[in-house]
Length: 336
Ligand SMILES: [Mn+2]
Image (cartoon, rainbow, N blue to C red):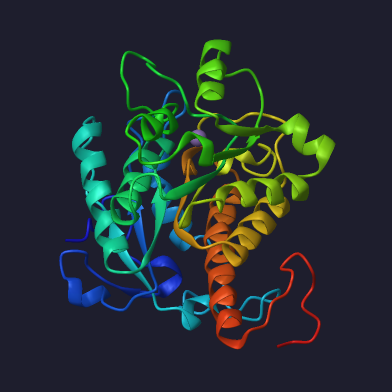
């Protein structure tokens, strides 16, 4: 079933064709299936990400016509790939266990069909069922994690429970879905978590690029190093984008803003490059909270994160067929 109009009209991402996860024939042969997870019961501070999926789907000044030709990559991801939108997974207000179970089943169903799931959050608690759903298909420990965020999201017990939006990464390691030494975090900053949590992360051999390191060494160098680690003895990469990795000036509509982040431009280039260079098997964009947004800045960024990911994947497949390779950080001047 589709969730319908509870959090907005039952429209699709920029007008792509719809499908229904209960009807396998409707998404057979899809390259990418977009699905909304309007869950914000894991939020610790400002709520509202349940309105994220609809805002990410529709915030765009161009016609919602199922076509987005990339100026930079010379692909039209929504046409070159078969991209479908399965609507929103039904969420159970106040029940994170049942809600997370429904998300995990949806993501696993998409992955098992051979398509790449692109999950529109929702708060970051959904990273646990999202990445687990992918790992159940590829094998626990076989998919690495590249995680953009201001926060490590490795808390243990927060507000008396285990499954809030500050804890999914610890739960993913504990259950074995993702290996600690293939867990790459970029953009951390601020005043959380506590030292005991940092100690636990170090014991797990997680690699976190705090903003000071990114500024000192350069974002591209950190990304290249993280990408190399991600591809060492793993079969695919799960890409988790918390929009609060960007500076609040570039992404004000989010629950736990932390000053001093990367720019929207840096995030889009990073997502594009990762999806072009690496075998990405799942993507999520989380923590877009429209009630705290201004002028749709954050929703528009979320929309473009999805498009950069899809365009990178489309260009990767096109070049794999033709044998061309190029540096997606460089302008594409020959127009191929
Ligand atoms: Mn997060």
